[in-house]
Every structure is written in C-alpha cells, then in structure tokens.
Amino acid sequence: MPPSPARAKILHEALSDAGIEVVATLPETWLVPLLRSLQDDPGIKVVEVAREDEAVGIAMGAQLAGQKAAVLLQNHGLFAALNAAVSGAMLYRIPLLLLISDRGHLGERDPWQTEGGRHTRRVLDALGIVRDDLVHPEDAARKVSDAATLAEASQSPVALLLTHRFLWEEAE
Image (tube, rainbow, N blue to C red; front, side):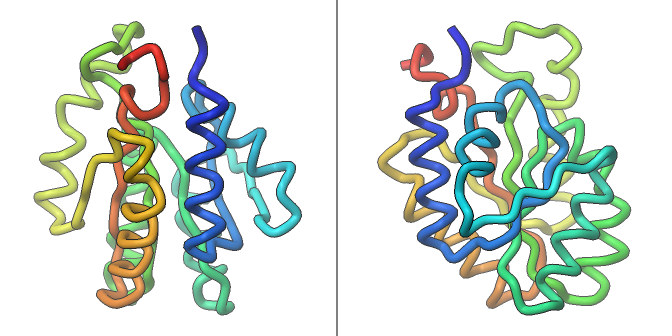
C-alpha cells in the first residue's frame, strides 16, 4: 500500500489554510501523493529541485519576496540542506517552514532510511530548531498553522516531522 492520498489532501489543505504560496521540494517516495495534490493547485507554486539546499534557497527567496513558503523533504534531505538553513535562514533571520518526511522509524521498510531517522531529532535540537511531530490527521491544520506562525514570529526555521503513522493510513 502506498502513502495515503487522503492524508496528502489533509496536509495540502492545511498548507493552503496556513497561506503557503510556494513549496520547494526534492521529490521523495512518501511525499508523492502530496506533491501530486499540490501540483494541481493553482494557488501554490511547487518548485522541484535537484538538491535540497536549493529548496531552502528558493523558500528563503520567496519569503524575502513576501510569499509564504515551505520546504518539503525527507530527513536525509534535511541533512543535505543544513548548511543553507544555518548560513541562510538562521543567520539572516528568515522564516522557514520545514516539512520533513520522518523516515527510519516504526514501520520503515527501507534499510537505507533508518540511519537518518535515528539522528533527525537530535540534529534539529542541537541547532535549536523547534520541531513537532505530525501523527494524527485531525492535528494537521493546527500544527501546520502553529509551525508557520512560529517560523514567522521567531524569524527562524521550524520543523514539522511527517510521521509514517500520518502519511500511511495502514499504520493505524
């Protein structure tokens, strides 16, 4: 069973309701239903990149141009994007909403994803990036809104970890 299109739609609606206008992403298996849903929305510009640090740069540029933006990636992608987040968003106080597919935990089927999941939270904590887990569909609207609001208020990155339980209906 693939990631849930119904859960993707819930997250899509939460991003729209939070006023997100630009989503920069490097596509990833767990995120495919969400990307398909977002690409059909004329109110959200999806920018696919070749490297995750490019996604951070695009989101920062959108923010500086007055558009609310989010970065959509997996936890290994977060590691690849950290220099851009630290030397860009954190240094220059640019709000950055990070939506991270939280690979490598309970229910993970791909062995190559497990190591990244083991370190994601500790890395975010070490950098002082506020984070929360999205587990239950009914929490999506509130958590996305709260994370976007905090990113704006703190002028810094905020991470929302998209868990297996949220993205895959079979996990319940």
